[in-house]
Length: 143
Image 1 (cartoon, helix red, strand yellow):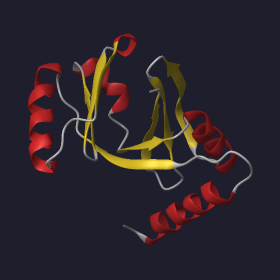
Image 2 (cartoon, rainbow, N blue to C red; image 1 turned 120 degrees about the vertical axis):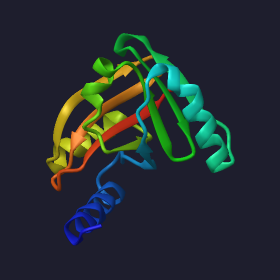
Image 3 (cartoon, helix red, strand yellow; image 1 turned 90 degrees about the vertical axis):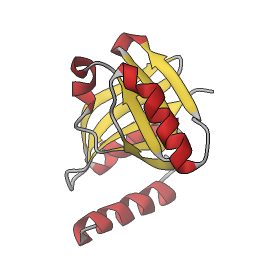
């Protein structure tokens, strides 16, 4: 990891832990592995065996035409190519306690919000481009 990216991540971590009132907490940083809908079961099985743990989340998002699964530290968006295209720019997933707080943090720190927050019954997401060029999807999940 380059020095500039390390400095930005240190600044981000410092800001999120010392800012006023409500604070965004990054709960998990996840790699992304995109798959076609008919490949999701095989991808889940592969990562369950690799990590030695069960799939910890799987749910459809009908308005987006996607199904999402997570195993270990891998986020698995599944859909046909035209539905995945808007999300392929994201290089990582940050699972946060609140997308609302992540949005506030982003607006105060200056990263570019590429996809405004969307909220649904299963949770919320947004896509942000950090100053160093890293594109991240921020997600939370309603339980």
